[in-house]
Length: 267
Image (cartoon, rainbow, N blue to C red; front, side, top):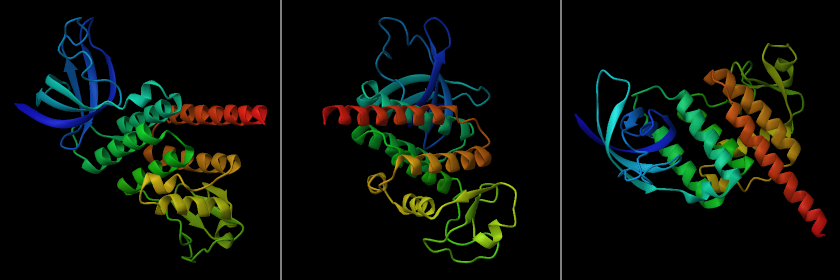
């Protein structure tokens, strides 16, 4: 059976001296694995037609009882050249595609995940990478998966928690916040939650677009706190390693430190 779809390159690896195995995310078929035969030959028709983070139009032979399909045609629709020049954007794009590859089951259509990743990569390619964008993307992903953190009311007593309340907690296992009284009961898996961190999480959760999300101002301390909290939450609920996330944040932090040093030297 010959099928046609649009798909994003998630990963690729050698299959032989001249061929590659490529993992894709498509809106129609979910995560699929394909073999691109002869793609590494000098005169292959596939040279330059796919790469990491590309969105492509595919025509492939689907094999129902095999783990890998065979690519017949591949046409790039979005190449996102910034990722070959901007190390920060490339690191974040690598994290996003790695995360989606880990959590997406094979051959299970999820068009909302495709739309989120496709638009997220577009934004990175146009505007570059920031911590705010990563936090926004992670919260949008959790929403798409039905795992949205509950950030308005206490998980135990349903008390509405307004800005400025001290002594709150965040239960990463239960997926939401606790008022000071309930947090003091020492539930397992509860992390301290400062009012400013809650306000920032709410802001990123409410932001409808990445463009709105990146306007939220933050300090390096707040980035560290939010990154730790969301990292624990993601690792617990998605049950997967997040090494690429750590690398991406380390690169963003290093880039920010270098910019600050250069600014001080210039002044």
